[in-house]
Length: 138
Image 1 (cartoon, rainbow, N blue to C red):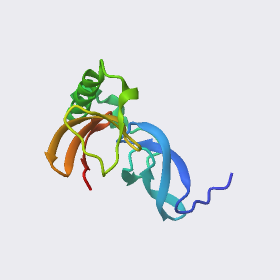
Image 2 (tube, one colour; image 1 turned 90 degrees about the vertical axis):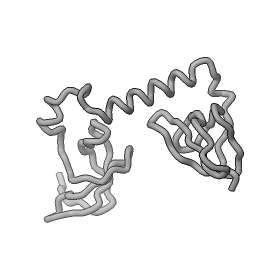
Image 3 (cartoon, helix red, strand yellow; image 1 turned 180 degrees about the horizontal axis):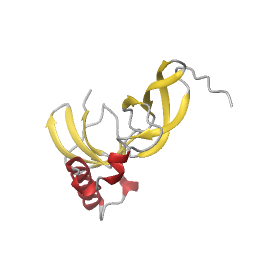
């Protein structure tokens, strides 16, 4: 097996943010070995980890505040979607004008719900992976 790597090449590696082994893009090499990589799922840059570290294996997930807040956001997302048909969602465009509690279908982020209209040109939308600030009326 040839172990020569090039920048921009894809490899399987452990992502601490996603907490799974996934495809990554090699960003930097040291002695022809990948050093800095970028997760193709969450776009997180980190050093190469061949497998899950022992610390993260022994730590229970429920103690992680960030994980709890993501779970809470996801629960709110599911609760708000309940009873609404995602087929009736509106395709998101930056030219559109949206109001609170509308269901939006975003090309990259998927189905979301408008949480609030912050300004005439800014809205906050809750997607499966969390809230995002997007533009409107452009």
